[in-house]
Length: 234
Image 1 (spheres, helix red, strand yellow):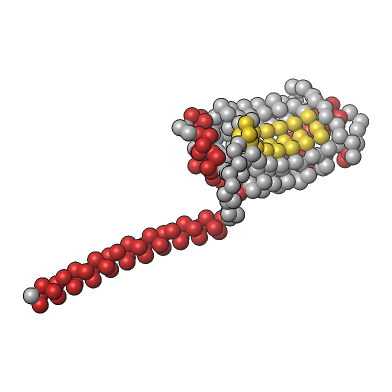
Image 2: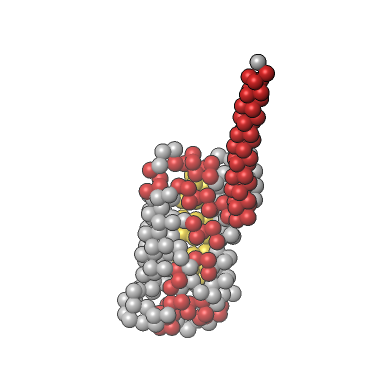
């Protein structure tokens, strides 16, 4: 297949077919694997992009108006690289519709929660620089992305947390690069994480805690009973 990397900057009121016609001209849409376009606020039916260009592997929508991934993430099963910098994105809602995504570049948006990235099990590179990520604990969800090697959160509010980089390395020990810098290798191999293991782990910990408390209370009760018997004998 041929790979085309084109750009259009057109602010007219248009549908996706017109936008594609202006971008790729007379090229066969089935043969296009790489595409760059700028979708204005007024574009209609952008969700049909994957239908018209079914073999997309790389898509660059930088500086488009995309409040949600749901606006375009449909039938993009072959997509591996997505660039959505400065697209007014407020969340990752709908990102699960791109199941084979390996690289996501989404800096300079308004995304405030990283949790939904956990649905991208093939993700290798994630750039969410200069977004509104604030909660460090939400990074634990990225452990579901078992192939994740590179992460960037520079310029996010969470980066102001004390010992931020150290905490990130502890949460995600398999990262090779963080904020553009190579991380130190950690020899400890992290066990495979699943929803079941989290739930079972929490339940097991709770049961162990209750068992410990019960045993301690039982020992105290037995000790008190023995003391009473000894006092009666005296």
